[in-house]
Image (cartoon, rainbow, N blue to C red; front, side, top):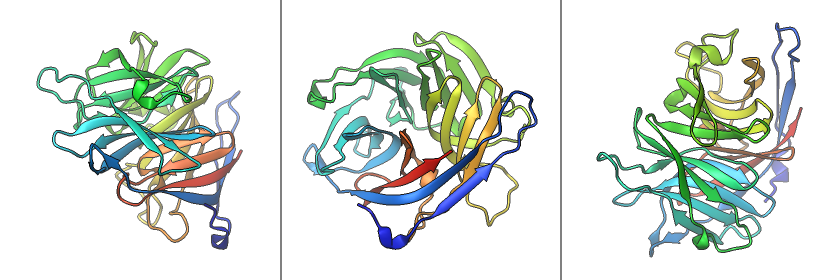
Length: 296
């Protein structure tokens, strides 16, 4: 659904690079439109889902979230873009272990064959099971069987899969640590927040969702958690990280979409070609997918 009357909203940012061999880049996002996700029913009741992650294909929105039932459940949803009333889901809550209920799925990514989703407890320092969900867009989602790839003794709020390097990046609660694993869970590296961006030890982006868009290259969305900042600036940030050189090569702050007061990067973020999608609100509460055109 395009809101042409709102006009074009442009946000541009460029970061100077002081590191030889690392190119400074610019990123521009142009507001294009939005699509409402109507409320729907799960198990005979109106669904109320605390949204976490988003992935977009030509045909579908894929969403992770916490179903606010008693007990709460982790769910993975597939929504038809051409008809967003067509919603299917599977529950991906692992069995309770050591009295920890893993009801908090996070931001997630796709390796070309399957989705990789972190499922954690709803608190910092909880346990996480990284689950793998095969992609079968032409089959009912209910026929999909997910498996646990590995476990982590921390709350992982978002995963990005680098299919070029065949590795996973995981951001914990408030991104105090970024983990790097092989697909079998073997730890490659554990990067403290102060070292993610080498020339900015005060870097404090709390990543909500991120995606690999090239080798060692991550497109991240999140909330600015710097303790000292200009209160007039938006806290919603998108950023391109070069993990090989520990650089932020592009970063911008996003104001709310026209006619709203939402923080765009509060939850789900996805890219499809040169289009960037945001799902900042909860499903079952007038959720909306916002769409921007990326120019880099």
